[in-house]
Length: 386
Ligand code: FNR
Image (cartoon, rainbow, N blue to C red; front, side):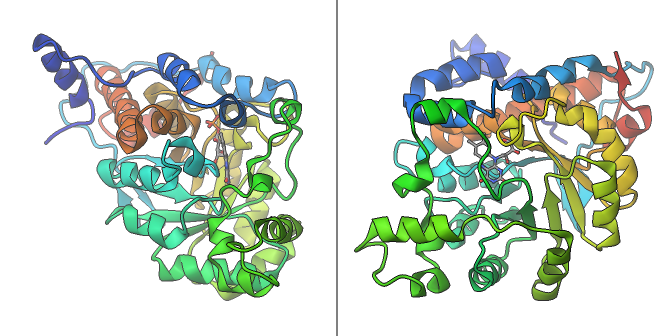
């Protein structure tokens, strides 16, 4: 049986023929390459965060104060990174976090499709954002047979919210990820200093522009009056959700519901009480609130409070060893965000697929060297605070 870590052998073998990897395998080099590939405004939008960006830096650096104790004399010649999530068996424990400007990141502005193709190429599920340059149906189609999730930014117009959810069901998305922390945009100095907010420039709004309910609210279609369509979008974006809304979501969809942005154990318990299917511990990569606490430091309390309910995680994951630490702290599946976006920037679907494969290879080899043959074994071992 092949292992994700076999990528390493392949790279060294290719090197013997004088062939070097097209894309870097580490985050620092990847980010540098992406800095050269993206326009300044888009780079600011993807790379930047809230306030002085302390939280987003902490998200990544906090992984350094978690560690894994190696175990020896364990046969790890065969490793299994598969996980069970919401009735699905996924071949690996990672997924692609929703990124609302994927569409803009590739030169052809079809980056949502490229991201979906990277998912199809790697078997890593893609969580498609509401903010997209391609309609959610086309995105789902490009993921092939790999399960995909749909991330909802809940509009104020309930008919539009329902329409988006119905479309996600019809397109065979396997879960509805409801983002809780973004009814209003956080204070992002890089974007403010450049006065750049892509949505207000008519970007990444195709899911709205293609929606019959949204279109019915317009005097003239977006193709004829983009300014009015953007204004209508701005008016409906960002319903303030409270716990009572969760029953409404439950009442209208059969899709498993995942609440994204849960960082407090009490909120995790409340989510369980409301019968949601999973929670997603994330501080939006430090883009929304500069609250100062790294997401990984909040994970294990959230997992403990969630009990049987699975907890997904993202924010600051930059490598395979970060993935392993998040799993050891109880995450059921780990979201990759900016790294795959940078992969899209430097190599489209192939670039993003390479980033995902490199992360999985490092995770697999850490398990091989440290003596954890399965995800269960490393969860049992746990991560230590250094
Ligand atoms: C995001 N994120 C995000 N989340 C979401 O629920 N819907 C969205 O449309 C977006 N859009 C988005 C755009 C960009 C440019 C970034 C970087 C992030 C947040 C994303 O899903 C995830 O929580 C973070 O990316 C995790 O942080 P890191 O690991 O990427 O730093």
